[in-house]
Image (cartoon, rainbow, N blue to C red; front, side):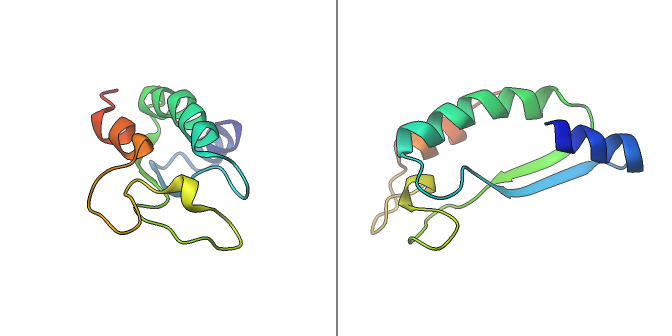
Length: 90
């Protein structure tokens, strides 16, 4: 949020935060904890116009693991993380 606030202070333009999550080897529990902390902050920041979690369904890559997925790999069912994100009402 410090970085987003600095961007706001410099440019005074609404911020669209796209594709954010915990990088590398964080577990699903770590991802959920981060989401529970960051979503209320994003909702309360007047300068954040839109935001989007990275990613709906993920295969492992250099940046993230499957733990960031909002959907199960071979299903249209939501993960615990996906359910929290979907149900969050800031």
